[in-house]
Length: 172
Image (cartoon, rainbow, N blue to C red; front, top):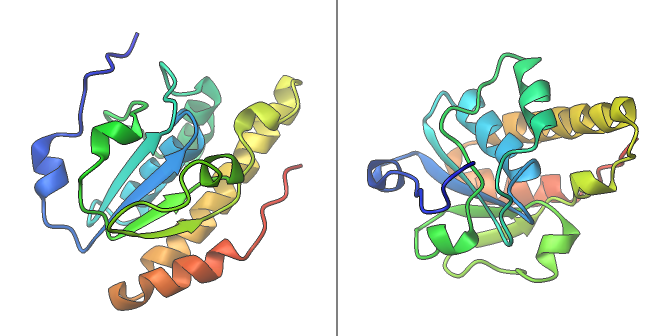
């Protein structure tokens, strides 16, 4: 069982990064966790990568571990966190990872906020094989967008993130 009172270390939140990004999903068990780990991996830690959820789950979804391990990416010390735990932190960009979240959190105060529309993993078919396929598609699409974002000059990231938000994700 994961303790809810864990916060990202003060050093991690205060550290000077080229850019600080917060990914917000509903439960912070799959979409946000995958995005956080992928950005940290792609940027080799030069970007501050964080995630949080509106109603955080107790643990990271098991298929999230599976699909990241397939490409050699680790979660490290990540765990589902509440948006309240990171409220007040200064983020350069907040990426809301679904229309379900955008409906209740259309803007993050003090930060550029955009939405990348992904369905909640619970909307993926119940069949394990189909669900795994859906998680892989989510991972691959996030990886592509995040890699594109990371290769963008810092002063143009907001514009590029918005551009990437116009591309629709289609589940299998």
